[in-house]
Image (cartoon, rainbow, N blue to C red; front, side, top):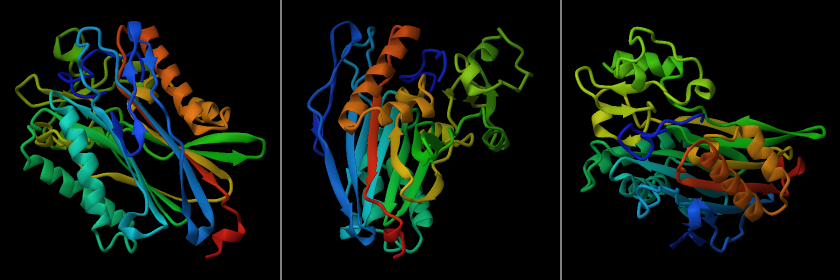
Length: 352
């Protein structure tokens, strides 16, 4: 969910070639047409395993704006800092009039700042935080108008056998964990929205009015400050508004850009989670909310598990997401997913 005036202004019922991967285009009557997909792999020699990955991004179907560009983008950068054990994956979901410019700017600058940070290997969490904040400041000072535009970001950094996930916004990361005969989805990020009590209280202290569209339009009592949960109330989520205005209407509490919303508590500081990888960790997925709007984490893990090839899994998940969007609405969101399989990690290789 983005800003009320951006690509996500419609109410929801629930939740070229770059870096070696070709972008897809929208097909006839909104059906996706997937371009050639690639399968790549990179080794992590310090712990004798490899990462096998594929990515797919699909422009949304917008019948009222057939020429609308894909505001999602992604970045995959292997061997960060020239280190063969450090690899970066990121998905960026732009919103607002200049969302595509914002997401592409952040895609390029975030990884560059990270890779040039001498403290990255010593203190990855601090480096991540510094990189997001500096990228945000650079976007504000760029030629891109980010007053009402910006991007969310979900990123994963592999350093040896440790996975760091940094999230700003409402895209998501999930990892698959083998438990006996089951493969369990474990979320590596939490959506940063006013549905969360901690985020709600933080933005309120910064002066934000938190109201759903129905409340703003007088259809519901604006004094009621509870909205249930995102799964049941996603059709009219709580949004952030300035004290005496009908803007910006963001349904998230963190993003990069969005300088107007920054005045009422929207920040670019990421939440970072850390996982020590084991042989029971099979793969991880990072994706924009175009995927997770209607598909829960376990469904994503099940779909990946049912496909040996991550290229096939990407296609199936994007296709299913696309179909679910059109089942509930007359449009789809932009959809981007990266699947990374963890191959060859053994208990013996963990003792390093």
